[in-house]
Length: 309
Image (cartoon, rainbow, N blue to C red; front, side, top):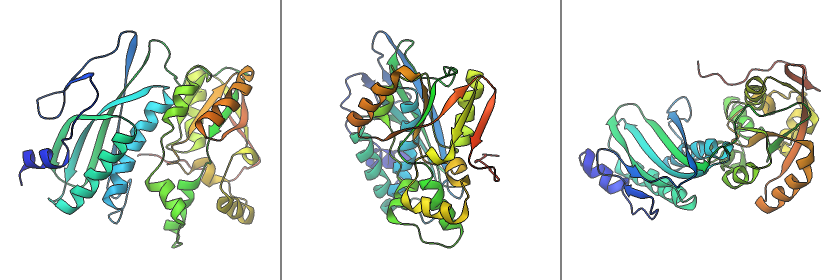
């Protein structure tokens, strides 16, 4: 099987989106933007030994590769539309490729995003996805809109993926739910679309709550005060923190792919309705302040969020 056979067999399937004029198989793809919309694009790379282990199932690698990009689109309040895939493979393993392809196709179908191109090459296992979305002109959520008095909110529970990673690193066995949170995150696409008219700033939690919230504060030239006791965490993580008084996992663990956002106080009731309609818990953990920097009440222990270098 050569490169072109591989692409035809595993990464070419029918495109249902009428805005795609030309997809996989040419030098580049063609698609049409709806009038009054802006293009949103993001890229993430996952590398074996850095973002996943050699024992991670192919289906989980495919899921996470696509999900983390969808999460970035969600954080912008945009609608995901298309993606390209660049994959580097150490060898041609058709069983692995089928499992990877089936998972990628299933998740892309669920979120109605079209694979429109990419590249394959030989090398260490690396997956790069470039995702495209659309959002109404000037409606995109950014990191720079937070204002003093806004509430600071997070979706879902925080720290599950980080707790799973901590267990793996300490010779403990994570629960199936914790493994799922680490390997198969759920991008909050629907929530992002609903927050578009309610939130003042937004980011997805990929490198840790503390670090990612700080990105919002720096971009907005504001500060914030959050309370660790208000951070929503799982029962298992709560027991761990109760025994250790170590809040560093939910603060710095990363890989949650929940949304962290700020919103004016007047929008609290509307957020409760969004929480119910999207079936996603939304928790207020603090407030935006005029004083620069992030103040964390309830924990003064060591904190170290993820760094790529």
